[in-house]
Image (cartoon, rainbow, N blue to C red; front, top):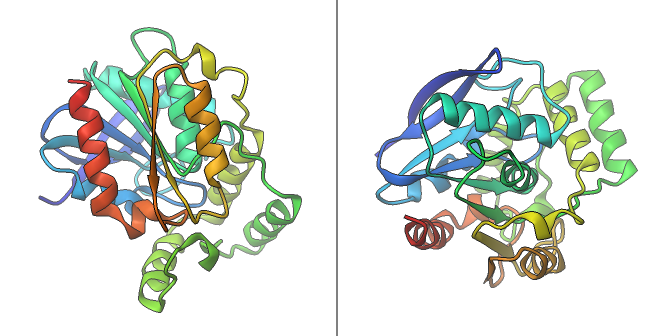
Amino acid sequence: MSLSPLHVRALGRRLGFLHRGGEGPTLVFFHGAGQGARHLEPLAAAVRGLEVMVLDAPGRGESEGPALDRTGELARLAGEAMHALGKTAWIACGHSLGGAVAIECALLPPGRRPRAIALLASGARLRVSPAILEAVSSAAQEGEPMLTPPVAFASPDPARLAAAHALDRAIPPASALADWRAADAFDRMEALAEIDLPALVVTGTDDPLTPEKYARFLADRLPRASLVRLEGAGHMFPFERAEETARHLEAFARAQS
């Protein structure tokens, strides 16, 4: 079944989700830097039986801007949106920068935080090199899209790159810049021990952007974490290996019901 648009107001903003109904707990997906809900649509659509929601961060898709440059602010928006929708049993699932948002969701006050978190190709700290920040800033000034680099893919064939880059071009450059600034500012290395929620950590063994050591740090420091290694997978495994990733998410989610 395909995903359909869903809208909700939270903290004075109109937020847009891609949504498909199903059983609980609800999987709520957060995308990576410079991306949008459509980048995670293949993964969400591959999840069987469970309700799924994929958020467009502010400043793209059908979510009102301006874009946010702090992951904690986006987590607060998500918590309020789930409260407005009456969702008490939800799992925060984040890819890359979205994993940082999921971690921040786990630190929200009771009544707003999720039941569990799933972190895909992410880390407890996401420092961005000055060269990348400068490149994204220059692209934003020129109004040019920031395209996902081939190194993010395990198999960067032309068709896959073209599909991802078509989605990248739909993201306003200023919103992409806010995302990368949010990634650079994110650091919750000292807070992981406070997160007493079930956590699934999934890593690609061939990911040069958030390497396996990032996932092992998360799995070692989060009190209730389990680690899944995807052999030969790169940073964009939610896009490249959606079906396989979905099976792990399903098993994890059903264990929380």
